[in-house]
Length: 359
Length: 173
Image 1 (cartoon, rainbow over the protein chains, first blue to last red):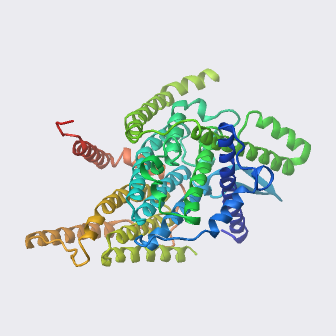
Image 2: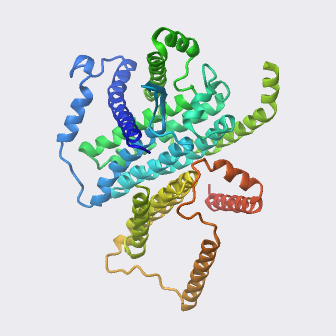
Image 3: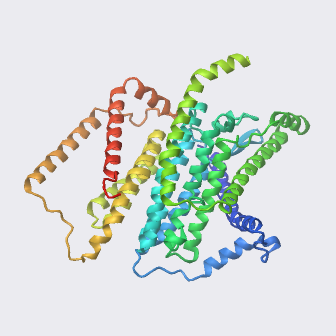
C-alpha cells in the first residue's frame, strides 16, 4: 500500500467518522422535534434558528457538569463502560458503502471506509461487542437496578442477535456475497432486496430496534421498574456518551437497513441520469455528480429510517419483558428459519424458471 | 508495518493471557480474556483468515464471554460480602488434582502434535488475499463432513439440555 492510498483511506475514514457524529448529534435534535410534532407542541426552539444549536448547548451542559463517580463503584470499569459503548458504536461505520466512486485525475476513490469481503460479518461482530459497554457500566455502578438493567440489555441483545443473523442469511443466500459493496452493487436501479425479502426485512428491522434498545424494546432503561436502567448512576458526559451511542447505533442500523434492503445509493432511473450527466459534463465531473446524487439518495433513505425509529418511539408503548422474550425466541426465530427455507427453495427452483422466462 | 502489527497483537494476546493466569480478581480476568480474544482475532486477520477472525469475535467475544461474564457478575457479589479474609482456593481430593494434571498434559500434547504436523506457510510464501469463506464452506460440506455433523449434533444436544435445565418443573405453577 503506497502513501497516497493510505492518506486517501485515512481521509475517507475521517470523513465517515465526522459524518456519523454529526448525524447522531442532530438526531437528538430531530428526536425532540419529532416528539414535539407528534405530541402537538413546539420542541426545542430557543438556541439558534428552530433550536438548531440545541445539541451544542446540551453537549456544553454535559461537559461542565460535575463528573461524579459513586464511592463503592469500580472506578476504572465505571469509566470504561461509556467509552466501550462509544467505541463499539463508532466501529461499525467503517464498512458502510456511502456511494459509488469519485474520479479525480483518472483515479477512482471508493466512498467506503474499508471494502472488506466479510463486511456484513464485521458489522455483526461489532454489534455483538456492543453488549459490553452496557454490561460493564451496569456492573461497575454497584447498584442493583443498574445490574438488572445491564442483564436485561445483554440477554435481549443476545436473543435478538440470533433472529437477526438468521434473517441476514436469507439475504446472503440471494446475493452469495458477504461484501456490503457487492450487495449494494447487485441492487442496481430498482432491483432492491426488499421486493424479494419482505419477511426478512420485517424480522431485521424488529431485531435492530431491539439491538439499539429503542422503544418498544427499551426494557434495559425501563424507568417504571428499574429507576433509570443500566445508567442510573451515571451523570455528566458519561451519561451523554451512553445516550449518544444509542443515536450512533440508530444511524448505523438505518444505514445498514438501507444498504441491505433498499439498495443503498441505487435509485430508479440512475442509468439515464448517469448517461445525461456524463454526456453533458464529461466523464469525470458528470461521474462525480452522479455519485453525489447517489450518496444523497443513500442518506435520504438512512435518515428516513432514523425518522421511522423516532416515529415508532413516540407511538408504541413498551413491551413487557416476557413478551419481549416470547417474541424473540418463539416467533421471530421460527419465522426467520421459515424465511431461509422459502428463500432456499426460491433460489433453487424459482430463479432458473424466472430467468429462463425473462430471456 | 505488518511485522510491528503482528508483534503488537501477539504481545497483547500473551500479556492478557498471563494476566488471567495471575489475576486474583475474576472480573478483571474476564476482561483480560476479552483482550486476549481480540488479539487472537487480529492475528487471524493479519494471517489472511478474515472469516476466522470475525467468527472468533462473534462466537467467543459475542457469545461465550458474555455468558461467562453473566456468571461472574451474578455470583461475584456474594463472595465479596463474606469479607476479604476468605481465600479463593477450591479444595478438592488429591486424586482430582492428578487427573486434572494428566488431562492438562494430554491436551497440551495433542495441541503440540497438531501444531507440529500442520502445513504452515512460512515467511516469503505468497499469502492469498482472496476470501476464504468459499473454501471453508466447500471443505466443510465435502471432506470434513463427519466432524461438522458431529459438532452439529453436539450443539443440538447442548441446546436440548439447556432447554431441559431451564424448564419450569415446579408443580405449583
